[in-house]
Image (cartoon, rainbow, N blue to C red; front, side):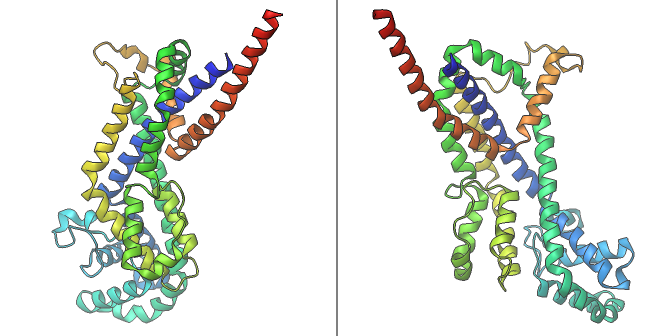
Length: 356
């Protein structure tokens, strides 16, 4: 009986992991489409300039200066760096180095605003002193914005897929065939996770890291043993930790972020295809991820319905992220052989007693 409960939990975790991976794929694409790295970097530079010089005290002036810096063709890594103003957000560079920031400010000052040139001697020492800590705050802000999008996508998918966590557990506890198929699909789901998020897989973060190592041999010596699962948050934290005291930290960080930005949109069809594979895995296991909307009871979306709160619970669980569900699945699958052995021993003991 205990093994049945464990298999029910494993089946539930398989479903949650599959949906969490789809959320991870969606948030990566959203991050590139909305230029979240660039917009957070713009905020960081704007804040830095406001504290660096009285010429940028006004929020409007500092924001415009940051926009001009990150849209400059010598800095912007975007495909739309030569496009018109309609693509301003996409034209934002996703990374910049300290020396680049100062040089571009000098260039823009000469071309656009002589007052900037007079303020730069005052601003340079402040920029040099606070640049690194500001970039740390930018990374933290980017990680938080990705977290917000993860939660938003979790809520959206929970309701679109009518994913009612208590109902799923109840179904698994009573449907032995479905439970067995989902347990059998656990290994395949683990492989898919390692392919999508794993450092040795094909995910865009790992690909960008490998490309950086080929471009920069010095970086290859330092950036060893990345986290087993890579998300934008874990990658940002790991890179900053590994490169914290390295003199070329800004250069390597900027290069990696540029590679990530260019890879995500280029590989968007491949990422969406991975989401389709996850859906196929669940369907082969007998679980339909997409509900039959024609047969759905739309009263379930009322706050007075138990199903509504079941979907709220699902959204909260999905917001924990794919790495959490991956690690949970591995732990449960490691526990299963041990528990199965104990159940078998207990059954043998009962048979021996019955014979006596």
